Length: 110
Image (cartoon, rainbow, N blue to C red):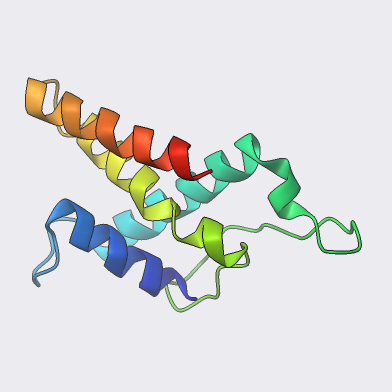
């Protein structure tokens, strides 16, 4: 699964699936890297290979890069990315509820 696959799912979650996007690819890439860092901070075991070797978790530099997380965890990253966006979009009640819902979904899946 590539970064683009995750970003496409994220765009669908936040209703940003029609070009021209509200959030350009550069922003999406930053959010993706932030979410992966937060996820691996919460679940450091995700950075281990089957034999216990620590996997390099370098930031993605392009959306075409492969995301080297286990499949189940690649699927939760868009929810955390959505939470970031809702948290940044303002303090109104709808955004706060959407951010909380996205974080709750993320937390329940990890």
